Length: 148
Ligand code: ASC
Figure 1 (cartoon, helix red, strand yellow):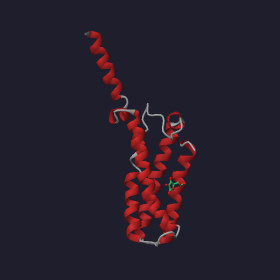
Figure 2 (cartoon, protein in one colour):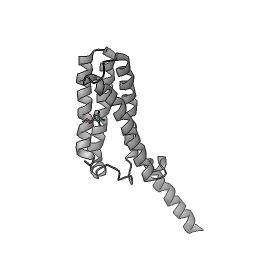
Figure 3 (cartoon, helix red, strand yellow):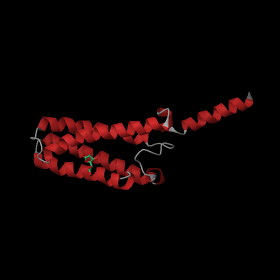
Figure 4 (cartoon, helix red, strand yellow):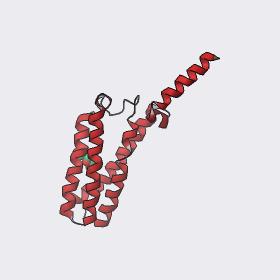
């Protein structure tokens, strides 16, 4: 009985120390979540990309809507890279270098805020610059933390 309750206590303490695992019942669910969030973010970022690259006509309202979504979506993936969720396309560097990973996340957040501000100007040239800076933030993390 005592053994069971100390095991339960140890289990509860372990869960409290693992926020991502507490949120996601299994590591695979964290991987699925972060991949889904990154995929949807890429879709909305890509819609802006199509405009800045001249593949579709510039639509200021659509750019603004997509940029606002990117701001929100860019907040989502990082909590799903918690301890014990190694795998998917992530390199081990995510867990070996958490400070650098966090800095990359924060750079993306800052870039997306500038992207949304640029989208609000309705000026395509301004949007192009902010899109390029945001894409560079995406790429820097991919280069360091995502398997090819
Ligand atoms: C995108 C997208 C990414 C980034 C990255 C930038 O449009 O889906 O992941 O840009 O390719 O290098």
